[in-house]
Length: 63
Image (cartoon, rainbow, N blue to C red):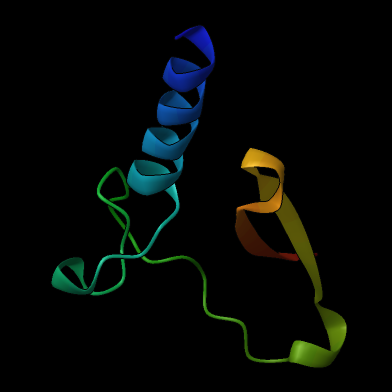
């Protein structure tokens, strides 16, 4: 039962802080502003974070 709670808590955090929602113009529920727009993709790297052992992948631009 503890494992199921941990999995649900991890998914809830992902859902509310990272996953974009169409009804909110691609903002997660806990976000108040859009992330900075990237114009030059050649100077930016991409960082992948595996959530729930890779069931969910989050991507962010790096400096």
